Length: 168
Image (cartoon, one colour):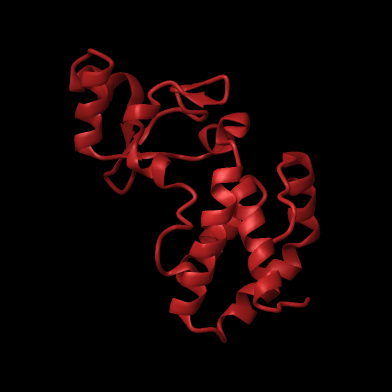
């Protein structure tokens, strides 16, 4: 397994350089069995993720729009000792699709690259970057959108390229 890259400036630079390569990689993956790719991605992710300290980065908290469920609205409000309505009024808004979303980017709860409500953080936050989930091939376009931002995604994608023999 390759040495992990955590320098976000380098990752951002590489993302620009590898934009066409990553488009070619998306096409290359179409020829692979989805379940086998999921298995390989999960294996790589299980190696990479524990070695990346997200609290050093916090880029996702600075850049992503976070969906919040009605249950999470209640749970986090309770955690903050405020009413769910006050939490909703102060921290959430409704998207055009009718979903609740955090009303600020970066997230209100980001403090020194750490989540101030970590133990009660939203499901979408704890699941990011979703590399443990199935259907990697079907989600690859969305994953690559965050390739320049997230060291975990960058390292998993680059290792996957090597392991399945992708050559640009």
